[in-house]
Amino acid sequence: MRNFGIEIECIRPHGLDYQATRQSVANRICTAGYQAVVAQYHGSNYAVWQIETDGSVRASSDRRGCEMECVSPILRGEDGVQELLAVGNLLSALGCYTNISTGLHVHMDVADLSSQEVLALTLRYRGLQRQINTVLPSYRVGNRYARPLSSDQVAFAPTTQASQLQRRAGRFCSMNFAHLRTRRTIEFRQGGLDPQARTVSATDMVAWVQFLNDFINETVRLVRAGEFHRIESAATVADAAAVATAPAGTVARRPLRGNAARIYAVLAAQVGQRLQIEELGQQAGLQYQQTYDAVIRLRAAGYAVRIHNVHDRRGSPRIWFWIDSLDAVQASTVTTSQRTRYNLGQLKDGVRAEVQAWLDNKVATRTATN
Figure 1 (cartoon, one colour):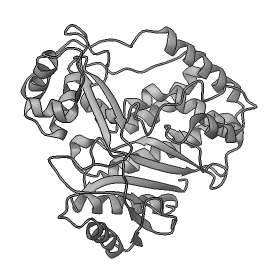
Figure 2 (cartoon, helix red, strand yellow):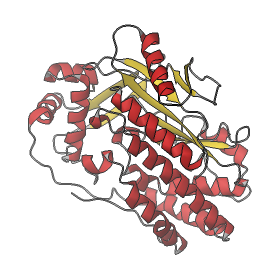
Figure 3 (cartoon, helix red, strand yellow):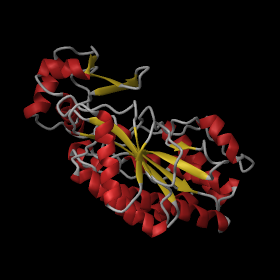
């Protein structure tokens, strides 16, 4: 198991004292036998857990709380995995929860990788992006803070240097190379916890870390077996196929009920008009998280509800929903339960098979049907 670090964005229900709430979390971590301190955003003490502020996290309107980011020390091997499990379970016991404003960022040690192996890792992650998306919560797909890598950002050439990746990609991509040269780590920013679970799942966090570890190791194995040029070629084929092919399929609409029916009635009465999530919820008589959950159920049921997600200058999310046509059908083939649960065991098993299909110049894209 590689060394890694993790940033857990979450909210803890509290009274009015934010500082005291964060201090209480640090104290509980210390009581569990680990070191923790309260720190400002982007603290630099990576020998301890740092409980920081984070302006991009916002508590749900129906469940107020103290927004925080729990930044781990360098976690080493299997002992680090056990520490992550312990702290994750502790956060859950304290009532900490996640929502659509939170994320899970994992820094993986890649000190043993060459520039070519780093490039191969980038090509493989980008080529498998659609498959990886199916095991992530839907709000982490195309998220502003974890944008997918595009062909303009990754050059498919063996001479590409790892340092060039950061200049092309920037910080807020699914893979962040900002610390590649200085700390020899890559940050994977796309992870996130299921907001419908309304808690911090330690097992889901560990599953994501273990997948990233296996993904890196498999990439290194392929490159050192002399397969880089085939990975590169297959990634180019995948690019062309992604542009040339239509959506994987559509799902038949299913009858609506409950909150989903209330949300659709509001949207259907205002076709083409964008409604902020707060306004949409107010018109439907629902709270913030209820509104978001209802929209996800609508999309899973085959109703083409569009989403536009941006952040203001303070980092707070602004989300709009609308429909363009009453007849439009959602092209997604992934159900809510499939997308919001970490089915990482299946994904890990499929990684080698997926790459082998690439090596045979066959672009395989997996879709789940209802």
